[in-house]
Image (cartoon, rainbow, N blue to C red):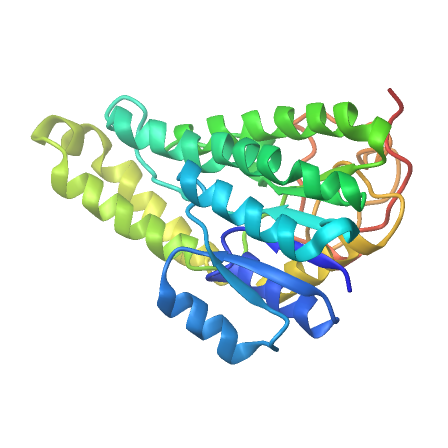
Length: 293
């Protein structure tokens, strides 16, 4: 039986991935932070699914998860790791509390490296593959999300480096860059925006009140786009088809012709000119040989 660990499996893309892989016969280790989320997953899945208390910013929990996963998979190893956990705290960089900036970089970037490091001994035994859930926000940046974009741009680099460093052991690494997906991250983002406005002084509210109000409208409109279940099926293909593409771009339809970004050379397209559509992620996972060393 193949095994996979998914971080951030309480809701959204992570939960959809966990339940889909469970339905496909995988043994799934689903990282959650609350016992009620673990109970909810158990209710929706088979006995193969194993919820793990895993705060990806807690070194002790990461070490405990690595020990348990490594012990349960044994010599078969860990076939898949999906680094999915993430947060978004919107706010103008000028006024964003520096602790909120650090928190987003810690969760969205540093924690992905920490979890991958801890799980690599088990992944190498399979050998398995690593999937980083980045974002279209790792390719282009928008106002009000400076810290989020900084972390996601960094994760693009981390994924590319891991892919080349781990290739000698047959470990594949892919980055998924979805657009708008209907998950609770948008609701949490609006709550964070409201908290920022409430805590900000008169001057930040005067300067940035209108942009924050515009963000709320965008968040409400985009929250209904995309289907996390489709994202979950995409990650299934990311772990089962060979060879994987290093940079699949999700969306509604596949672009054709000379303007389409190359799967073999994912950096060949200018970030500002080719903006991916929200096409079906499943359709995006057609794999080609990754670039050579």
